[in-house]
Image (cartoon, one colour):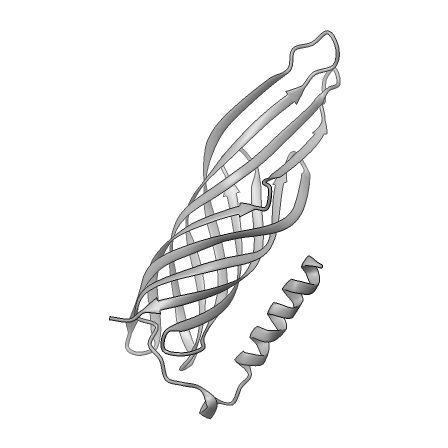
Length: 198
């Protein structure tokens, strides 16, 4: 069901993207914006991964240079639905080691080029922080433990954004986050947003 939903959203976005240029409305990518996001989330740890539905949001500000290039900054929030956890066998003495990922907070810059008046292709990069929990379930006779902490990292990504009107837009993006504790996250998502033009 999730794959069907994401596939339908992607098809709808591509149909909008291939509309004739004369059917488009000239808009501005300048100003504050806010959007909701939903897509596929993959959390990776200990050589294992888990695919889930994820959702979040982002807000930021964009500026336009020479009516061609867009540069901006954004803050973001993301989480896997009901969180994401990977469990693997302990390497010494048995037991199970589980790493659980909670929400991810990010701050990034993005830069892109207007390939059409209403379509922006962009890349992004920045800082992320993820709350995690590591839990060791020990076999009988040993001690179990659990530690909850936050880990920093970096994020790289890219996407395409399409203006529906002078106020509303949709986008499709991919982002990769690498955390300092050697865990990582990938996400492919769709977004719907509103732009507050000055």
